[in-house]
Image (tube, rainbow, N blue to C red):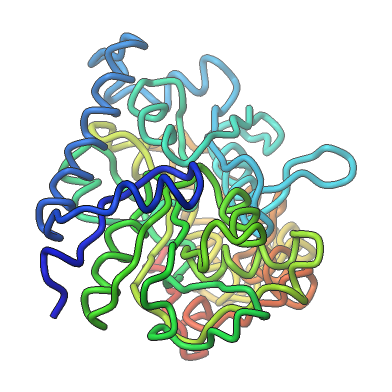
Length: 375
């Protein structure tokens, strides 16, 4: 077992000498408490600075409609999830989900203000009231929902944590990382998972905390760290987009945590939470029922089977209580397609990443994606 004497203290990325200087003796439990306490203090300070008040709770739908724009927090650039195309337009799962919510709430998928954020500032920005929705590769955890006042309407990507190394290092297994400097992004679940993983395998390591996965990749190339850890999808994305990455980076086998990723809203607004949640369900249900961007308008005028009628017609009647338009489901699918279309466009065979869907397949195909009934 890993002893207190072998547990490292998290250090910032200031070079190997700094990493060595910060090797410490804090046990895992103490470090975990410190990380959670620090996250809470950052959220609290940010909220007080920006003058967050209780007036934000319970009125998101009205504010969004009054403003006629959805303010959506996304990552600053991560292939698959959030990136700008050659025309300067935001693409990825996260921007597409923001557009889907705008289509439902405002009837126009283009009425979105995208606000790119660093990982560490995403929750403070949401809690400050400066965002209506956060779509930023955020993992669902009990501590986040119970501890900092946010809610996750659902999961739109099932992932798991992995490790990436330089191919030239010959490191191919987790046990090969004993004694390594490991780059990890600040403000993520990966920090605690990293400690848990190395404790499980009785390995020593020094965590080097960075601001982004691109910074981690750069440090890996420079030799400042010997491994980088993040969600496996993010490792694939960084490997694909870093110059020389596909030939120089190797993702070692194994998944070392469960990382269910989803959109985030502030706690205290049940209507907004419900609206965002059922937009996600609509994307998933559309794929199961065969409703696509191409055929949704045709099916809306002649739905046929009862399940399609419930999905495209009855949902419009039920959505009146949330102020949704009768054709809100059709507007969502017409704007971004169904979940399968979104996945293929940004992660699948139509993308540069070509990540197998795995757990993100529909439940009918052996995956975990399913939606409640729309009747």
